[in-house]
Length: 214
Image (cartoon, rainbow, N blue to C red; front, side):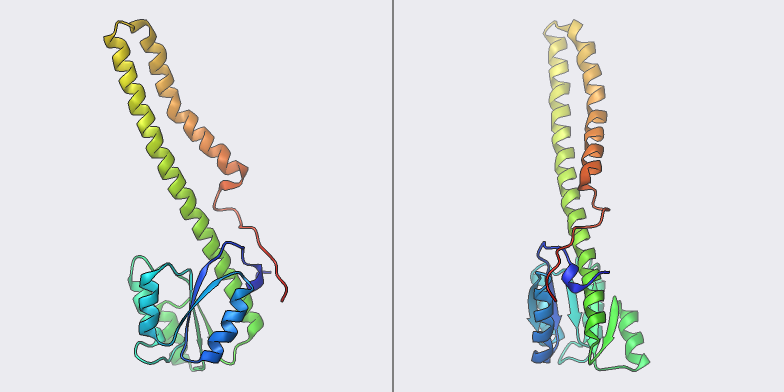
């Protein structure tokens, strides 16, 4: 079972946007158990400024806040290409279906009514944090593969230049072997990438979990 204490140890950033300082402190205490960095905002406008200033992996927002309310904040997040993927937990004293529908239609990932069922909150938030860890691993692997592809391209260009130079310098007998090597090179690199994923680098595999005391 996932819980907030089961999230992997790679530190994530969580924003808690709520005008109730006591609620923010309680949530922060629980998130610290999952080794998260917690940022605070007292209204939607401040939350949106923080989110645009740095990477946020999870947002916990209130429905009714001064200025920009929770629904408007969710709409901002879902409408921006850099933040539309962020999981959003709505926590509010509103229990009416109008509020629930407005939050979910705006793009909330899940909805909790105050006073919270903390067991359910920990479970759902822990699940979302684990998904955020998987997203980070995927992005890191994609960056590594992109850098590897760029390096392979440079090596192939160098090899093409060497083959052309060999032909020009009267080393024509060596050219067929060099061309055969050049043809095998991309396939060998793809095979190496597959072996790395089989060894455990595939981001589709579940992330390791770090358990802490409740």
